Length: 313
Image (cartoon, rainbow, N blue to C red; front, side, top):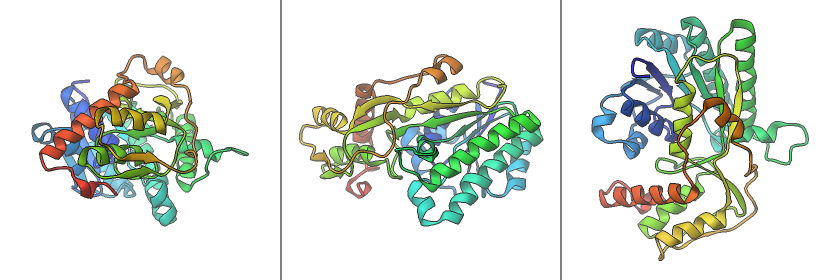
């Protein structure tokens, strides 16, 4: 991939931070695209030397012409589309959610069509599980947007042979995960390190997907030209809130972290076998390894004064 130029949308987000770190380390030219120049989350994943190698472009994902022009200007030949508004933000402002999640995805697909890009991976979500008839899982506007995105990608392949790979991450945890309804386990890890009590607002089964694992999958998805528009679940490790809090307390015995409430409203045990068969090998972490790495990173950030009690909401 060293000769590739990869456009990463939603560059200021959690997954994007680690995707861009992996791409930079692989010697790939990275064009980060976001609404603002806020690089706070990428700085949690990489040092300033790595961050300085990213070409950072600002703009609105809803402006399709701007997106196409910048991709053409930089010679982009692969796209990892991660820009999105998450569950609570879509509920608070439905029109803004459609603008970013639906129109933004159309604009990415149109950019790929216009430029003949054969390497496009986009983030769908576990939230799509709530959108089927009679589903026992929570239905959300965010999930509806992601279902629309998957359907559009299928049509772009059918009508114009624009290939894509859709990945439905489960619940991502790790450094830089700080917003959305499922961020609570990561916030609990921050709380443990900075010495602040915290209660995760749900209990029971939970799909833990370490952010570095999902980043590795997205990078692998654009490592070669693709055919078709397949979509895959990416679950990570099926475990429980109680188990991960036990792991946290093993590393930080004084941690005052707990769980309370009903079970998380999405499935915890979807299979990763199909995506592994499709992509081949990409990096994976056990729950113990992911939690340990996250706590170690949070401890270092705390010592550097870049993380503290104010980061526990």
